[in-house]
Image (tube, rainbow, N blue to C red):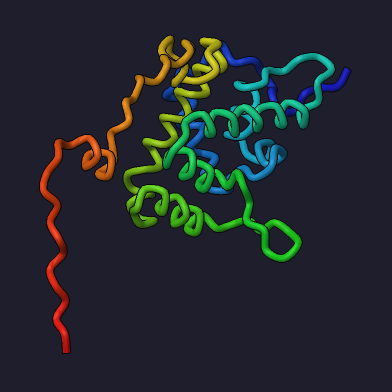
Length: 194
């Protein structure tokens, strides 16, 4: 049996969404384009422990891969500009230049995240990063502790959609003329002659 270097001691209580949000913010500086990047920082290791708890015989890399998949699925579930901004801030899809992936700097990732909301990198840093970390934290918390796949999975979303309303086609202008009572037809004005 191997010793798991990722989790030295079990945590006494479940992390709250607030604590998970702080952990997510700790991932912003380096990003996590690959699952193994989660094992490079204490915040990443804490998130691996939270999303994929230690089990006998499971290697830390396998747990990091499962945690990374959960993060990507949670970001995707948030959808819209939130998902695009989080993908940029966490560098979930590294830029390909030539034949290899190149890690973007934090400033470049903030600029890319700002495009999703139509704001600059400094606005992302001051106002958006915290809000996005909280939204992702709640999504991860719902997935892990409550057992719901997404915060957007309400009863309304689980029911099949209602059938579309019946639409009566409007008659075209030619059909209107045919259906209209007989009117005297006007001749077009005469053309000027030269």
